[in-house]
Amino acid sequence: MTLTTEGGESIRSNQTEHLIPVLPEISTSPNFIRVTCSSVTVIWPRWTVSKDLGTPPIVQYIPYYRESSSVNWTSGGIVTDSETEDEYQFTFHDLTADSIYEFCVVVVREGVGGEGDKVKIRRQNTAYCSGKIDTLFSNIVLPY
Image (tube, rainbow, N blue to C red):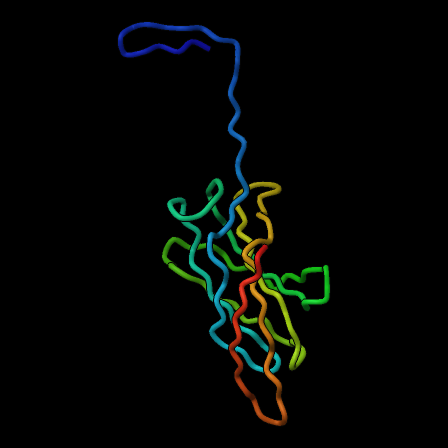
């Protein structure tokens, strides 16, 4: 490969540089906007190159949850990235009442192996329900 400056200077090299993509990650934790005895709705901002880590293009988000005593995460589904959206929300259903869960949102970039790490985890209790739907908000940011 030969590199040439505007002044006509050139240098030849046999070395090649490779760009290694960095897995994306949102810089903020998801927020809770609705909590019932059997569901939790989270909201998070769209990934942007100016605020967040990683290499674009971003194609989707995967919300995950687990009971706080578990080591295994469960995918809640897939949310497709859109340039027309500034934020996204997702509702986790069929949760156990009066239980502690951990939630996070993983960003996925284009290509094989593009799923980022599970970071910015938040803990939330589902509400205690005694025949009616109660709403409980107790946000705790974990130091992960």
